[in-house]
Length: 560
Length: 67
Image 1 (cartoon, rainbow over the protein chains, first blue to last red):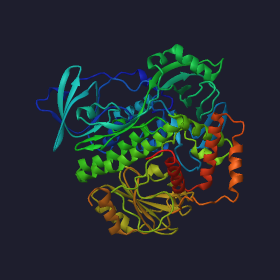
Image 2 (image 1 turned 90 degrees about the horizontal axis):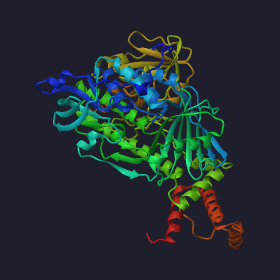
Image 3 (image 1 turned 135 degrees about the vertical axis):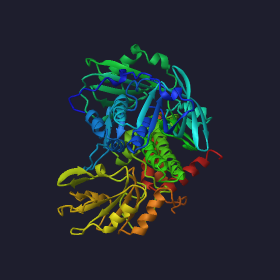
Image 4 (image 1 turned 60 degrees about the vertical axis):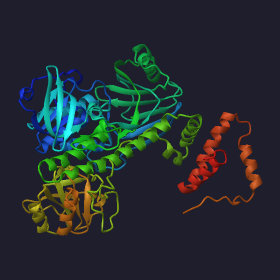
């Protein structure tokens, strides 16, 4: 993918329906995994599974990618997942990186925040990138994978799960056909058809408010930062959010209130004056896309229903403040993919998939809690709530404590799967944030004398990470543990800066060039971490002890 | 666990009360509500202990609502 190659206009692409031999099969064709919905979550799940050697069929009822920018803010952790999937570089090259947010109240700035105050991470806190690019790049990646088939204009219209599979009825322009799937991943969005067909619900709180979102093209003098206005003079009584996107496209969200007429507000003659009020006279812009939305914080009671697994908006919904929708959906997909791959290959029992529920339901609750609190601050629903909100904003100008109360969205950070049944609790003291369940932190490392990044060297398999002292040889036990393991387990040793990794063949090594990896993982010579295929910590020790490693690995794969 | 102190704790109670009323001098009801909100936020930060704050909020609510 040369940098010179221009991207297609992903929004205008259509993907033709093509008849599949499955439609003429005498008995329904059997597929190990059917993913329903080719949005960001379904595409990510399908790509991840296919990369791990699982044959995947992806069905989508439509023939197009997303229209309009929709989910525009992609968080650091999502970019790291895209790196593992093999399309992170393209996303980051195209996206607008940012880490500063500015908050305004009425006509004055209140404060600014920095989302990634420390250096030594490959990926920025966030990029802004229109959803159609994210889907387009994931789709391009999907098309490189021989194990991944996509069928457009294939709508699931019937679903009958049983003990050892699921029978799907699929409706196409040429009529219906049936499929057998060992497993179904339902990533078909907030109005999930699969969920409805199974008589399941996503329950929670619906917010009585409406927002107008507009994409405009213009050359504007604003820097690449998130701007949030409470009660600005150009849109009194409501809030406004501005984000810069690639291609000189800007995204503006206007709060409208519950009484606004969504049909009227969509009209250019209504939208353009609102934008002009924000930008001032004399700024030329082109209106590209407009939508009016409402939102709800919802979730299904469980995400695993036998052989049907719900992910993304199908499983849970959040308000948009905090960019926790698509980002959490991509984390769902990643959490599910390695587990499903191990189960399908017979390397893990089916109950490993119960941990998808046990891990991602609390993650969804964390996202719902944060986005609900943000929504209540941004759109106060009572007079007293507004009085306190405005008091916080007034105090925030010169009181640091009040700045902590300002809530224009608590921006997406990955969930730490603290109470996961796959974790092995610490038996020795460790400092810092890399507790079992945490996604492991990135750090600069050296590989073969060249600079690289730690996260580029882990993932897809379990990794047994072992920190060496200055002149320590890698313990033989690393190789023995890897060789005997039924699930893929890769040893990786970390050599201190300057000592130069001198690992024997068969053991990969990185050099902790700035000492940041050891600092972030609170590691000393001998410290050993067991990392999951999704780069989350599941166990750690102060020395390499093979029986404890075996026990932790068994627990992390649902065997114990 | 810290407990909300409902025993006398302000040395000059009458002076405090006078200052509290004085804070609202010449304010409209709306401005007074805003100033009260700011005052609550400042004092809450001074207290700091969320458990004590929850007890104070429950006590305050109980003076007007029976739930």
